[in-house]
Length: 470
Image 1 (cartoon, rainbow, N blue to C red):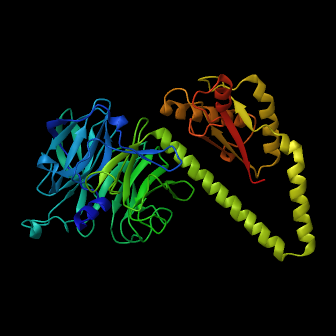
Image 2: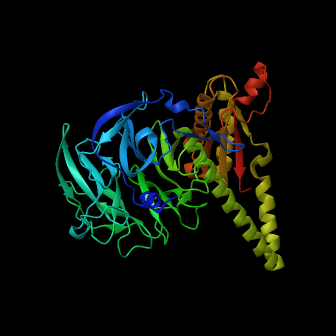
Image 3: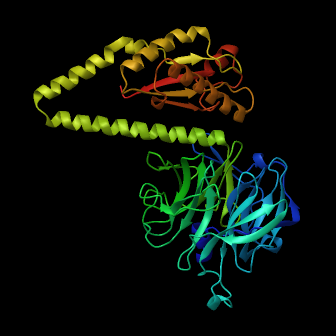
């Protein structure tokens, strides 16, 4: 991969402007047949039908559609400059190239539009006077700007006050409340490479001072492509030592917690970055070379992302429990005999408590149903009593379906079933932080059959209850 495209990944370059000519693409945006399936899993990474032989990077939502940057030229062959391409309606996708009214022969970047559609943020290679005749933008720093929009007309472009001539500012996004702005920069005083910064955005349109998000997010490596869910959940990309190779996508709660690598199949040994989410779609970019071109845009469903993150959270919990067990074992081996005796007795008494072995571990459901039936509420009440007594126990609820119907619908239904159990346990006094609810659809039937009987289908419509830490 050339240095210019690598630079684009860290400090995004897009173009910003009005629509011209269009190219039809398939109406089957969500059902692209080329899919990459995680071994033994249910998450399918789908390359988008509109990918080209050039670089297609940094997707972002624009009203009901999608905007992304590409250096495709005539016949989709790569060229030097990146332009912006738009699909205005993802349910009926038509690809449109944007006319460069606000751009130069260099690059505009990081298009972001506020909820009311009146303010547009973007970044640009702003030339210094002594660079006016340069023919390359590879070393020209990016600055960020805002522009007010009235109907279809743009007003004067305003430079953001935290730009600088010796560093870049790019990749503008806002939180859900639109009172904080986030950007990527290699300004002096950071942790190294590019860092993510936060700026207060006041009601009168003025800005506070940039604040580095700190060592929880930023490292000596590069952090880039921030995206906020609500006001607290941040998705970003980094090539820090915890990445699998190149840029990986991470998530973190800014209020607490540590960044979590989203793992496979979203992350790979290549660069994976620019993840965005809404209620219907999850898009990101990658140069994993599984399709044409270098960097392409891929998608999964929000339901698949939720399952993947739940599995990662489960893995983290199990790892922590394993570490605690190993630590306890080490302490026991090196302690006095009396301490050994006390720990062994405590564990023995604990395992026999409250008919532990007899607790119900399976809840069955009716066809196409996610509601709990009366017969299972008594056993779940017993489980809640047990869990409230032993607060160190975590619960994993794994939902399943039969193999009747659409697999994507079954995945959603299995998640709803496990969520029903979680809601019931929480209503009976169990902390929701101790419960993980995931759905696996029809992928793991307990009755493996092709022409299943009614009884076999009934057994497959279930939630399995797993208790960890015992």
